[in-house]
Length: 468
Image (cartoon, rainbow, N blue to C red; front, side, top):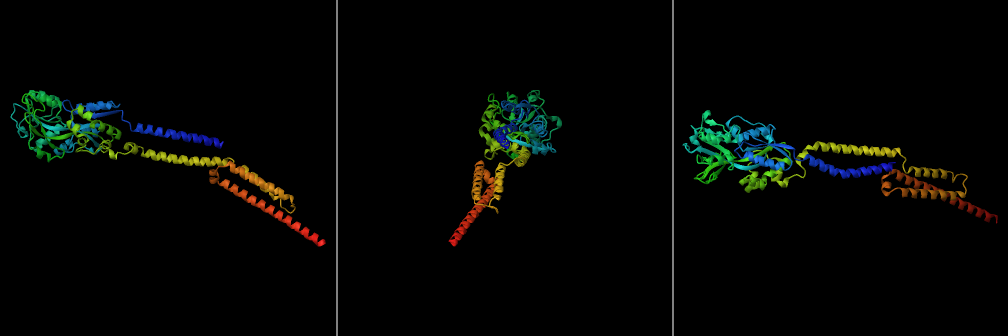
């Protein structure tokens, strides 16, 4: 019965060995798979955030992820939505939060829960003026109607920051927080004299504003000095004819300005798998080519990870620093730490229970040596009647037969047990010692009987010679 149970236990162990890697692979794959749905905070129509987010969503949908692109007023709202767990990813104009903090009290708490994925493209400050208005630089905006972008946008933060740096104090009624889509009409109706936009060079709104010569682009003076006030800023030049190569060009000459990077951010609880997948998508040259992201296309990963405002996401780090990528997914390792301890404890407990059960079964059943020990004890009982006070020479033959029985019994036992069992089983060792002891005892009796026989023969021979 116990042998049959052992056989079934071996089958069970083999089955577990086969199923364990399959189960481990399934669990790991299931745990590290991409989520079913994600949300990306983009921007408004007319800028680059919305079309880029939509293109990224298209790539993610190809991987089986449902993606919702959320139109927003801009960077600060995107940051707030990340912090409030309303979206998983967001496009963001670097430095927006710090510029708002500089202008007023802290506007976003919990920035430690936000992670950096990659830079996407540089955004340049565009000072756009009506052609028929006498404006040469930002300093001339003090008594003008100026569009500054929607509140909670990076454009608004940059415009307010520039007003502060140049000491411009505009009346509230002269500050117009307009959407990109409303700017062409506002210029046409002369409700605004100028606008400050911080957007990528490929933004649709720029093509609309400079489709005619009614609007002109002005330089940002003291650009080098401005970059000393914010580490994320850098100087840049908008080349002649970038937005309209004909009719005198727009701009008509190279324009000095300042620039900063548009970044893709995510929440800190975004899985490493998802973060790595999104990072690989945005640093892929096909993505940069489709969206005409020249700096990302040429600079690749070097540009993508330059000047991060927030801590790098682990998924992005595995892309930018593949040499330190761990063997197992960090999220999986962290999430299963408690489970692994529990499983190990269960396995140890199961092993100890199995050993206890096995020992209990073995003790409850007759040991295979019990039959041999009973036979050995019977031989020992029989030899007690020999070599007694009434012993005779026939006892030698009887003792020899008993000795042969002990030898055969020992041989049968040795054939029935393997060397491993003999080495590990204390009962087998005791049985062999009993066989040796009984054999020595029988041999001693046989020797004594033979010696007594010789003594008697010697006495009889001596008496016979004396009588003669």
